[in-house]
Amino acid sequence: MAAPAPVIAVDGPSGTGKGTVCLRLAEVLGWHLLDSGAIYRVLAHAALARGLDLEDPAALAGAARSLNLEFLAGRAEGVLVLLDGQDVTHAIRTEVAGNAASRVAAVPSVRAALLERQRACRRAPGLVADGRDMGTVVFPDAELKVFLTASAEERAQRRYKQLKGKGAGVSLPALIKDITERDERDRARSVSPLVPAPDARVLDTTHMDIEAVFDMVMGMVRERGLSR
Ligand code: DC
Image 1 (spheres, helix red, strand yellow):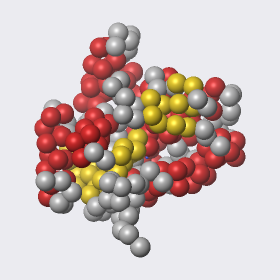
Image 2: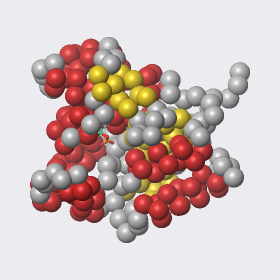
Image 3: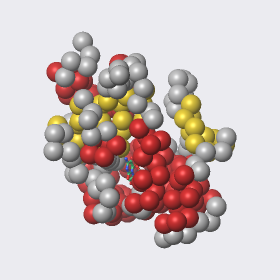
């Protein structure tokens, strides 16, 4: 049997530059991209829209199993996310959707329901997988595992600048509180907690700009012989 397509797993909390690094890696290498956070966000969005109880594991797992989700890549404006054929690209990026995503993601039966869907994204010539448990649970045999970190204050600052740039009214202390709470929930959950795989390369990006982070990760990719 042919060897499975190679995977680069990039894990870590949000605000570490993970999303940007993965998008660029996929572009440069010409590989597929899995934004696993977007799956949890779409599920959370669907659950909220349908009035599901976020404390009801059976209802959430049912919604996860029947989730009609599509990612349309290769467009100039970025990846388009569709739920039941409706464009939810922007709706899933709100703080409300992010917090709800972190709650639904803590439910073991939800994670189990979404596992095969994520593994099915592993296709030639390769996959860049962005998430929290890509290197530990979804692709434990990934060719390269990177874990990006940064202090909560720095990550809140980055998010603050991003939201300000979009003209949103936000408060920095509220963002720091939100990020700290979300990290705590993601790290403390019983299934697939946010921890680096034992064989992951851990990179603290607190004092690095995105170019430097990308260059470092690209260096690791070359070292592993995944790109020239
Ligand atoms: O990366 P993100 O902010 O889009 O992820 C949203 C939430 O989804 C995050 O708080 C935790 C959860 N998540 C997860 O549990 N496992 C993943 N592989 C990706 C995201």
